[in-house]
Length: 178
Image 1: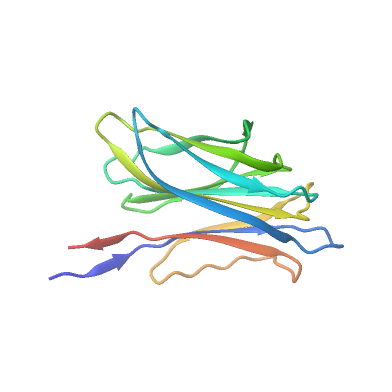
Image 2: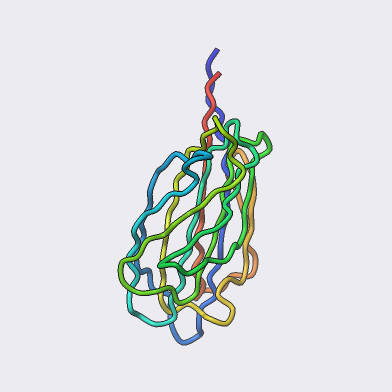
């Protein structure tokens, strides 16, 4: 018989905010791509505001299939490196989601370049990369809490939040039909 199984991988991120302001959503962009050993990068444009106290978060979801050793090795925006924040790989392993960030990224329209490693010849990794920017984010402690989980059904608790915090979630799911 056929049945569908969804294994969500959840990464939730809490952006700490200055007490005098609420974080403001700026922009979001994304791209789908297939990564290989000869083409391990994906590039897509993202536009960032000129507002102050900016943060850029980039989530990369990868369908690993036979390339189970694949991870993101670097992400840049306008040539500036991002910092790794957190990742989760499901138990199979079928999927991996990573989150990276950069404080005060360059303004205007610039390219995000995601580079993966661990892909051997003949393997391919389907990926979805997304970028989100906010302004009014606390630059001294921008990411105050993270939590990850693999659940069916999806459930996650993020402790330590306040009414002025912004919570950003990345949810990935792999559906298998047998």
